[in-house]
Image (tube, rainbow, N blue to C red; front, side, top):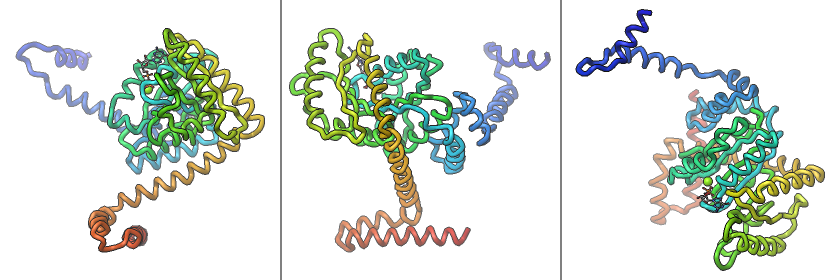
Length: 370
Ligand SMILES: Nc1nc2c(ncn2[C@@H]2O[C@H](COP(=O)(O)OP(=O)(O)O)[C@@H](O)[C@H]2O)c(=O)[nH]1
Ligand SMILES: [Mg+2]
């Protein structure tokens, strides 16, 4: 009772009466106390398997951390979750900014949750660190899906290289699957290398397009079209319907020029509107057909095995690179060696060898000291 009274007096603002300092100190202490309680590895794993979203988010935050203690903890959580992961459908969605990816995912995701699916939406967008816009944009475009208890939306990890973001997304997929999400959607911007990274972590790759004025095929990177399992022309509404139909025909013709896929799947083209929702359920039907075919002919599983190998190698590459460039001896030597190469004082290969020798020598002596 007395405590309540003192709280009230401290919180009631009267002009000229200063806030009693001791009250805020207690509040700060309480907050700090609770913040310090970090869940154990076991708590995290149990929480994830119990499908607790708060725990899932905390574990993903560990995955995204740059702190080596956090990362070690994250690795243990991922390992414990692995036996429960892998049982989902992973869909990658790419397309240039503004094509309507987020709006599409909102409409598509709602169809999936209405079918009883649990949908996790992740983003691979290394550029979001620079623009700061896309995270905000995604959340506001997915207003309905954000509120859906069967959906979980996690924006891209920031402040990272593409390699870093991709690895973290790959690990986040594992955590989401262990938490019971059976459909994982990964949105990525269709510029740069991110679609290649996303392609290597999904089962089905969807390229979102809009009909443009003039030559439909201009500006489309051949490589991205070749990766696509489906090309969907979005914004087929209002005056745009005819143009979208035409674009669909053009893309269909272009797709026939590509060699057949190992999966035995023939890529499809269709139109949709993420605003009117026309044609969105067709996309899901296409994916269902893809699943039936590729599971029957086993290519679904073969691809996942290949992807696992790829991610093992990628993780080693990333680790070695980070470890090399973060070593203080290398950091001290790198600039002067770069200058020496520029001034033709040493060949680039000899310089690289010199730095590599330095790195391994230092790593070795550090190990011996410990
Ligand atoms: N008319 C129309 N506009 C759309 C459609 N899908 C998205 N948009 C609009 O296109 C803009 C970009 O959408 P957004 O989902 O943020 O694109 P993203 O950058 O690819 O994620 C927004 O103003 C959307 O309202 C559609 O099917 N029809
Ligand atoms: Mg978006």
